[in-house]
Amino acid sequence: MDKRIHLELQNRTPSDVKELVLDNCQSYEGKIEGLTDEFEELEFLSTINVGLTSVANLPKLNKLKKLELSDNRISGGLEYWQKSV
Image 1 (cartoon, one colour):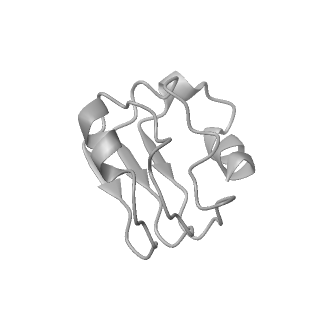
Image 2 (cartoon, rainbow, N blue to C red):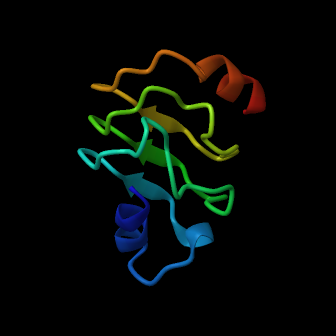
C-alpha cells in the first residue's frame, strides 16, 4: 500500500492530494500504511478490497468528505477513528 500511495502522488506532495484511490491494493497486516496526516487536503479516500481489518491507525483527515471501506473485513478501530475526526 505504501508503494501504491507513492505512485498515486505522481510527483505531488501529500498536501496537494484531494483524492486517493487505493482499491485492490493489499494492506500489510490488515492496516492502512503510508497514509499520514500530511494529506491535509484529502477529501476522498477509497480503500475498497484492500484486506483491512482495522482503521485504528487511519490519521486524522479533517477535510475528508467520503471514505470508501467496502469489501474489507474491518472488525475494529472505527470507534477510535470516529473520535479523532
